[in-house]
Length: 102
Image (cartoon, helix red, strand yellow):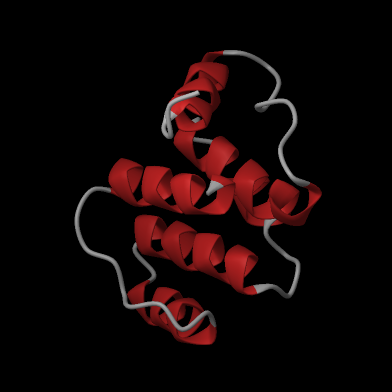
């Protein structure tokens, strides 16, 4: 399987009702948050990333950046030791998903 095949399957799942099957248990919450974010379901995405992990904090940061709450986003980026992202939100969410599945 080529390296991006799992990400391709994840993206394809955005049109359905279920997130990619066989996601590692350690990334279910943050990946579910990314999945909902990419579907435009901000509240469901935010609800999914309430765990106290660096991965959830990273998604949480992106969500608040998308919302336009940059000071809150900055807090969450610092909390997970990530630089504040720039550019298109979809690209950030896909980069997060790719790393989580990596």
